[in-house]
Amino acid sequence: MIQGIPITHFLIVSTLVFFIGIYGFLTRRNLITMLMSIELILNSVNINFVIFNRYLYPDQLQGHFFALFIVAVAAAEASVAIALIINVYRKYTSIESDNVNEMKY
Amino acid sequence: MGANVFMFYLFSATILVFALLAVTSRKILRAAVFLLFALVATSGIYFLLQYQFLAGVQLALYAGGIVVLIIFSILLTHHISHKFDRPPLVKMVTGIAVAALGAGLTLFCVWNYPFVNNGAAPADVNMNTIGMQLMSLDKNGYALPFEVISILLLAAMIGAIVIAKKDKKEEKTDSLSK
Image 1 (cartoon, rainbow over the protein chains, first blue to last red):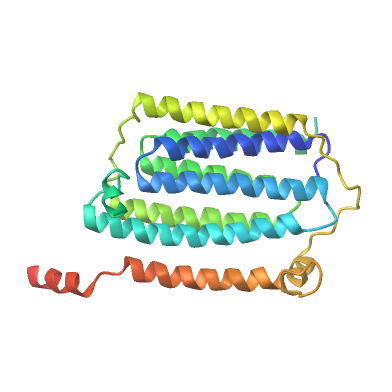
Image 2 (image 1 turned 120 degrees about the vertical axis):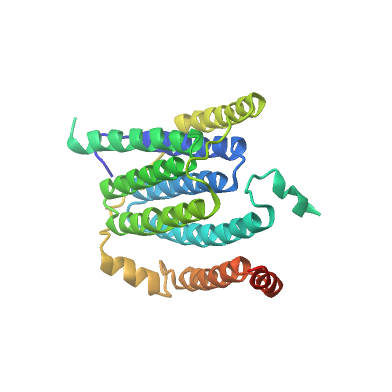
């Protein structure tokens, strides 16, 4: 842990990043930018795991490993999402989320 | 004020500013680069906390892998000079309201919660410990999630190939039209 910085300062940063990601997810209409917002959200969750591990349970590594696995899941999610986006682009020649709602039914 | 403290505030400011730019920028390639900066600054925070391995993974996978993948897909699907319209005002206000409300509630809880350290001596986080724990089946072992994640990665890889490849019919019509 870093001397002189309380845990709340880290948590404030990660909370703000999380809700910036939420804001982006709600306002963006392009699928790729929405994916980027999701990456921001996952990243802030990662910071939280690592901070709780370091500040509250420094003798264990659970948060550290959870963060590792989240990074792997994020990579898998991004690759599948981008494959889907490219497929959608071929069908509709645009990747605005409004055009994709035909796929609902 | 020590160097560590200064670096922490520098990295936090970088993360916040570039995250905000990444979700508001109207040029998509710039948004991707801003996202890259935010992720790199996050890995700086991991370095400060002395989780060097995690910081390296963050740099290699997030900054080196995912952002490159996103930039590739941007180049495949967009004209570089394309500029987004501003989001409609109603949508923007709702977004800001939801984000502010959630952030306010969470920060209120975080501020009032008494976090208690368990008082144990910090573990030494070197490659040896990480490797042993990742592969061990005992207490503090993570062999099962490790295997599950490897199957997930395999499934995602095959799924991505199957989804993104062209149908045979389309290929035929393509070759005929040429």
